[in-house]
Length: 568
Image (cartoon, rainbow, N blue to C red):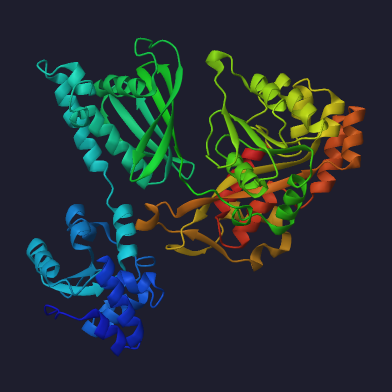
C-alpha cells in the first residue's frame, strides 16, 4: 500500500455526512479553546462515534476497518513491534498478506508514525484502521510482561550473588529505593497482575526454584519461575511494606499495605507461611476505587432478585449470603448496601478487611491483635443506634448469637457464612451452638452462590457434549438434552487462550417459611432438610449453572465443576 495522504478530518466527516457543518464549526471552536484533538471533541460532544470516525477514515484511504474485539490476533505478529513503539505510534501488527504486514493504526493520517513504522518493521505496510480505545485496551492485554519479570528476577539473582552489593540496597532500604532490584521486580509483578485482572498473587519457594503465580478468574496461572535464592529478598521486602516482623520466619503472619498503580489504589492483604523450602506468600489484591455493582447488574435470575430485594427491604431479621472464599459474597452484600444506603438509615459494617469504601457508611476494621474482635465491635455497634448492620462473617457462636439478637430486636443484619449450600446453613448455625429459637426467629432468608467462568465472547464456538458431559446433562435436562445448543471458548489472545473471560455468579435461595421455622424449633434436621428440598426443587445452584450452560454463557465443564463442589 502506498503512503497515505494527509487528510483533513473535519472535511472528510462532513463530506461523508457523518457530521454536519454546524457541528464541525462548534467542535473546532471547542478544540481551539481546550487544545484537545478534533476527533476526541466530536466523540465527546456526541456528534459521531469513535467507530464512525474510524470507518470513515478507512473508506477515505481505501483501507479495511478492523474491529479488535472480534479480530483473532496472532502473537507472532504482535511481537514484531515492541510495546513501547506500539503505544507511541498507536499501531499493532495484525497479519501478513501478500508479502506485506497488515498494520492497524488508530490515526492513519499520522504520516510521521507511518514512516517510522516502515523503518522499524522494514517491510511494506498494508494499513488497516482501528479505534484508539480498542487499540489501547488490546495493547494492555496482549503485551504481557512475563519476559520482563523473568529478566528482573535474573537481575536480582545476580545482585544477591555479588558480595560487593549491600543487602540494604537490594531491598530498597536506602536512597533511590525505586531503583532497587527487588522493588522494580515487585512493582512489575503488581502492574502485570492488575492488567491481567488477577485476584491473588502467589509467591512459592520450591527446592530449586521460586514460582510466581496469578489467580485469574479463580484459576492459578504460572507467571514466571526464578532462582530460589531471591525468595528471601522478596519476602523481606513484602514484610517491610506490610509492617510484619522480619525476624520471625517460623510462624505465619498476616498484614496489609496499599499501593497505587495506574491511578488505581490497591489494598494488598498479605499472608506469609513457613514451608519446607522457605516462606510462602499469598497476596489478595483489592481495588479500592472499583465501581460498586448494582443488584440489577449481578445477573441474578429475576425470581431470585425479587425475593432477595424483598428480604433486604424488611426492617429486621438476618439475611445470610453463603459460599466458599472467593465466591463473591461481599460483592453481593455491598450491592445490597448500595441500594439500601439512604440519608434516613444508619449503616454500620464490621469487617476483616474493609473491602469496599462506600460513602455514608460507618465502616469498622476488625483488629484481633488489639482484641478488636467481631463480637466486641458488634456489641459497640448496637449502642450506636444503627438501622442496618453488615457483619463480615459469622465466625463463631458468640458473634452469631449477638448478630441474631440484634436481628430479633429491630435491626436488619446482613452477614456471610461458609457453608456448601443454602439448605445446610441453618443446620451449621445449630451445630455451632446457637439456640434453636434464635435460628428460627431471626433468619429471613439464605442466598447461596458460586462463581463460574464465562465463555470468552471473542472465541466462542459450538460444542458437541462429550459422552460423560451428555450423561451429566441428561440427569438435569432429561429429553431436552439433545435439543439444546452448547458452546465453549476455543482460546484466543483476548482470554490468554483459556476460552474464558470473567466470571458470573450462580445462585439459590432458601426462604425461612413457617414450615421450616417449625422444623428448626422441633430440632429435627432430617425434617428440615426434606421440607427445604421440596421448597428449592428446580431452583438450586446446580440448576442455575445449567441455565447458564443453556444460554451459552458458560461451559458444561464449568457447571460440572460446581456440581462436584456441592457434592463434596
